[in-house]
Length: 220
Image 1 (spheres, rainbow, N blue to C red):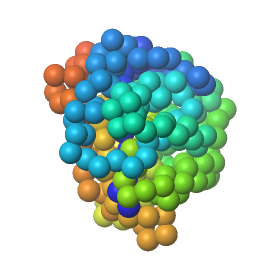
Image 2 (spheres, one colour):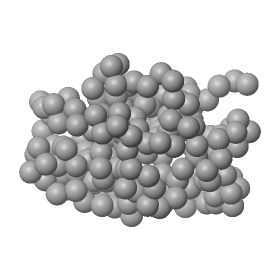
Image 3 (cartoon, rainbow, N blue to C red):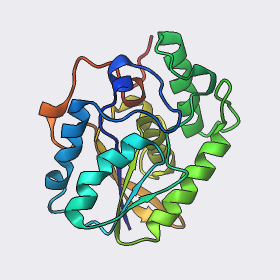
Image 4 (cartoon, rainbow, N blue to C red):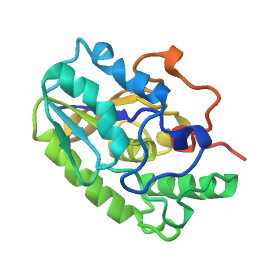
């Protein structure tokens, strides 16, 4: 089957560079609403059978225009939410951001015992995300799954058999960027494309925002 992992539209926390992972989370900025609005046209020639979104408000708002356009229900899944920041929640300082991103990328490299400060380890993340991807994979030939920056990047690079886990840390995923894979939970996944910019293209990129869960890990 074909899997389109779509990051949610821009939120106020994305603009401020904050780790904002708690439920139900913020809505979208005005730019985020515009990013969501162009998704139906950007995917006009893609056949989509089912639409899934996380339990966080921002993914459901992002999925809504596509669901309306295709006449499909949004299936809210418990395991697709962002990787919890734990004790780092709402922080935006460089040290906290780096701790968060290095932790999640360690999971992608297979070091699942590493724990987020005051939060989960990699075993917990992959268990919940894998479970809901399995449901999406059984739902039709193509599923659009609306999720989050760190979660999509870490899961896709870890599960795709044709790229190394470090791929996630080296490639951006802007708001409404899409990662496309084919395969199945049993046979494995192949990465087809990693379109890091918004589905509406460069005019919908906010170059002024500090967006840690969507940006490549710097070397400093």
